[in-house]
Image (cartoon, rainbow, N blue to C red; front, side):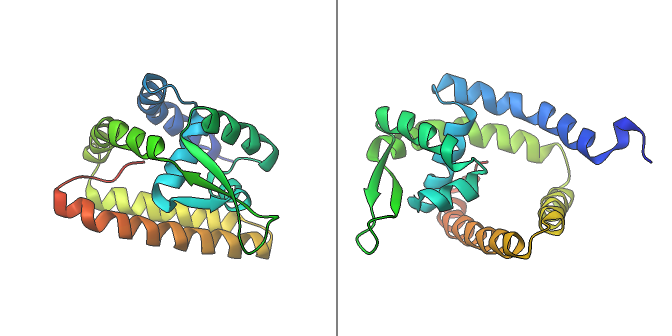
Length: 176
């Protein structure tokens, strides 16, 4: 067995503890929690998601997510819309204020992200990202969960790629 400091959970915790304070400072500056941030970040990429898809993408349990969305809605950053096709489905949508927040936050996030990416070689950055994604998929035990994760990963990658094209033309970087 590996020593505690070399164990995967401890490596991941230490990495998270090293990376997240930079982002938490930004979240605090703009008055959002980490969970609220995850919701906003997902909607900045997809504009609207059903509550269940948003729970899956943000890794926030649906009962907790309802409260997070309530608080973001009270701040005017997101809105709820019932599906026209199936009234049982509620979509969470980005508002104009939510988009304005993205424009305010993006420079600070881009700066932090650039610092992080500059700290290691670009090839290693890509390898790290790919390896973590593969490990996540490999550790998903239920076949349905694995296929759902792959599908969501593909959707997020497609959204990222679509949003990167204009950003690269402007010389901007993507955000976490």
